[in-house]
Length: 200
Image (cartoon, rainbow, N blue to C red; front, side, top):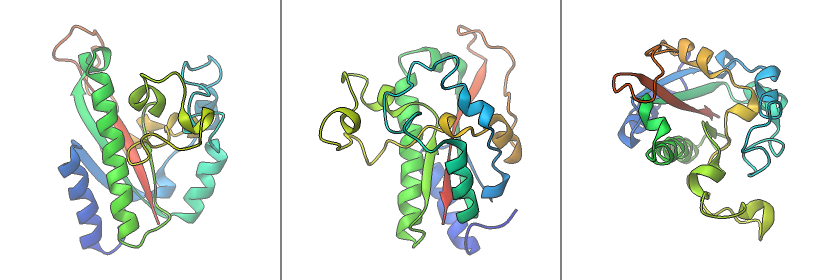
């Protein structure tokens, strides 16, 4: 795999990811990220409950075509994941974990921009509306004065761009399925949530 920049800068971004709370972080070529139109269409049919609620989800994002254009322009990526008990995603802690994921991605993006990679762009799992503005009726960006309530943290959802996240995990050398047991009450069942930053 190619380095993002000079080796010390790649390592700096990977260390930052872990210091911010990621379980793992990897540097890969942006071209290794698999994007599928069919995956993005799942946001519409069956219709996702978050469809249209924020500018970070369809139909307000550029979708697979837009992501592929970014891949042509930005050659490198940092991929992160948080490993956690499956039960957490079915609990009140889910919002906190997803918020942390967005903050990790946003932090890497900011650091890359400060290094001079001003076109760097982060993506994370989950809708920013349900994570950060669940207690508001509507997204301010879409319904009021156009100012995001959480611009320092909220990042676009990977789903709307058709990113094959399971394949991304395999590309990074991480098992796509940590534990096949999916019961919400199984304390030993583990899963992950993931995000990425295109660097350039």
